[in-house]
Image (cartoon, rainbow, N blue to C red):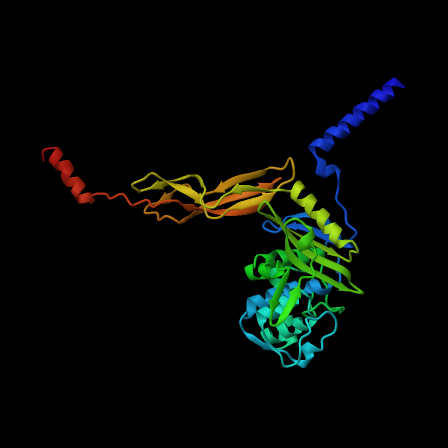
Length: 370
């Protein structure tokens, strides 16, 4: 009996030690969603996944793509005349009126803050001339982003058998969209008065979750509750996606607490950082300093470590100008490459001036008394 008790205490101590050293591994996160993903924006690393490639209805989170395509193909200051088709679109609305004229920027606020289905149609027609042409641009952009399990049939997310995506694809889209400064500004706005309307953002996470800076809610009876959000803490940005989730607000809050604590971003290289030297032949200097062209960071779990190797030529031939590409730093995690940073020459190296061969020959003759 005593021996069994001692074994129990030993096992309990081992569990407590593991918990203290690897708390995030022991306490696995879970959600109420049918499909979910948590992704680091800058690296694209997936930190949590649940049925991430299941094709699902996405409701109004569709409007993330609508806004991104409009920003890349339209002019914020352009005027859009609202058609009857747009004004009479079913579902959530910013209450557009036929014949009304608004700027594209105003319509984008109505699209992303109050989820106007009417705004989606007006945006599509204003940017591409017709809804069908705009949808083609949406699918083209999806292909460019590598959203291989996605198909768009409309700009607002109304249910359609040809309109679907996955949690992972939507995370990829959200990361791309949040790198557009105008998009990020719009979706982080809680309340705004534009075009004679005061619009309030439906995304409650902007108030409830520390560091939340966007993105988009969605709902239809068939799709259920869909939510894509983005939060930033300590310079690191994460995107969370849940599809068909009746407890999405709480799930997103939990995902962020998990992600930021379990996978903090580690800065491996800073733009302009000196990373060594490279030999130079035929120059006034025998080497040139190398500096990083960009910064690089990667989210790492406890115990993980980035490895770096340098791909460089044996030497450079003078003259060498500052800013010349001289190789790359290659970062790996567990033997798998995760990123590269270009390395640049940090200074000029001038060509060493050599006397002409004929002059050298004459000097030798004079020194020999010839």
